[in-house]
Length: 311
Image (cartoon, rainbow, N blue to C red):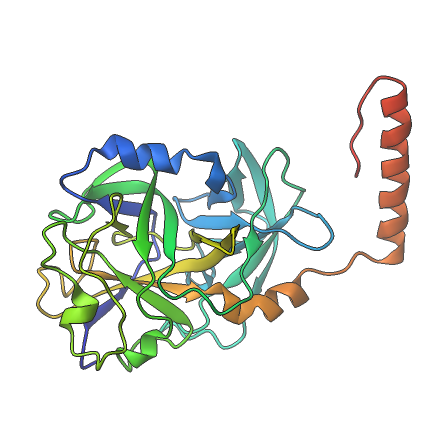
């Protein structure tokens, strides 16, 4: 790789590193914001996933990273997904074709849960092309630290952080990075670590040196979690946390873990919108009939003063 040294993939846990001049409480508050209630985590660690909307209102589908599946971190029939304070079993896994463990190309999987998620509003997944320069919010659990230290402390708390998408196709920055992921870097508040501008990218990176008020990075381990962005007034899932990389000049170049100047890669969800849509099956006639009867029953019970499930 000519521009970056040591692409490091993060298959073990979730983590967020923060600005060293900003209170951790601010990142904890962002993590608790109900706007991002569709973010949850799998058993066996803090690997992330995001509950997505589907055209049939099933509330049973979660998007995550394929490298977690390949590593045996998410297993149908034994893993669980926790969201809204409840745990749901993993009943089936559908991975996008063409996954490459060496580059993290096509690092996206859809998980079907064993039961519908209740009490949580799923998020729409993005299908457009306007992600560049959008501010994303990522949610992570587990390790934390600052841009000076990288991820050093595990406390299992849920944090949120912001960053700005600088590059839509990571392979334009380095041949060793996947074309199916976008990039952003962790800017130092001093304005001295804008990696995607300092690297010789030939103008392919549109990156500002100014750190956001809640700028952050995914430390050496935030896999599968979702990245959310407001586009056209609607909140979308736009990315799935996939890997971390670092310039050769960074102190953690051999093992990137969320220092200032590190670069985060996320699978670009819009490139897989057709795969996701095809993965969510249309209910068959029998299922539709049962659903219709359940809705009727619920309406009848409402007239009687009690509320029953619509499914």
